[in-house]
Image (cartoon, rainbow, N blue to C red; front, side, top):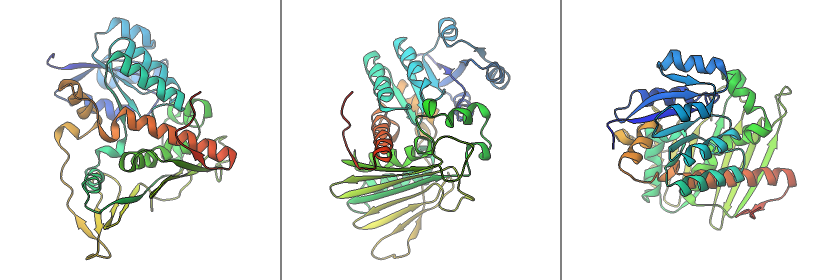
Length: 344
């Protein structure tokens, strides 16, 4: 294995690309060497910020640049073709959540990676919050007994109001390119969390609404309820919430305790059990260096030749996509949807 893995950016219309790219720039295991996007403004930004070769053609970048891996940061629908393009060239792939705009796209991405024998990792930004990951480890380690419910609410005032660039929010507001509206963008977190801790649900119910934003044509609020024989989960999404009360809060319920996680890298982890009814604060250890951000985990898995596991695995990402699709089908039909969804 070479001293540093060479990484390129395929697409830059997802605003998360800039923070992820910065992590690659600071890595000892990888270096950012090229970028491509059809928008000339984004090409110039990549050149200016990172001093790398940048192209308006994906194919030109792939043909002219020696690469080991790529980060796919286009819209949800476009990410499918870019992932297949990279996999066909034997490149490892990091993509943003959710994997695609629909289940067929997620399945195609997973199949392409498996066929090529390359890594495919899905970046869930909350996976790099030490308090959140500490709670997940405690829950999976049996600290609160048998798990029977998870809840996660992702909410803010809206992509445009939050300050997202037009390159980003324009496709978030496009049902074809995003897959839906707030449901696809923000119910994805709670769906992945539930799938990771409880496995794939047997039934899904979805509710969507355009409750506040008259200038969009997609849902600005959504709720997905998931069911198992002895568990349930809730994924909430809002693009119209004023303030951040209840936003990005994680709750995990078990037969012997409850875990509540406040958002962010500095958030608190609270544990309630039979001796501490109102909960006690737990110290969250720092994440290992190889799991401190998306770039670190991705590069480490490539270097040590270990498949991406856990929350950021392509398998969890694919199953979260199935939950999202079932939620949309349920919202349209007014009935609960059983999983697995039938193959097309």
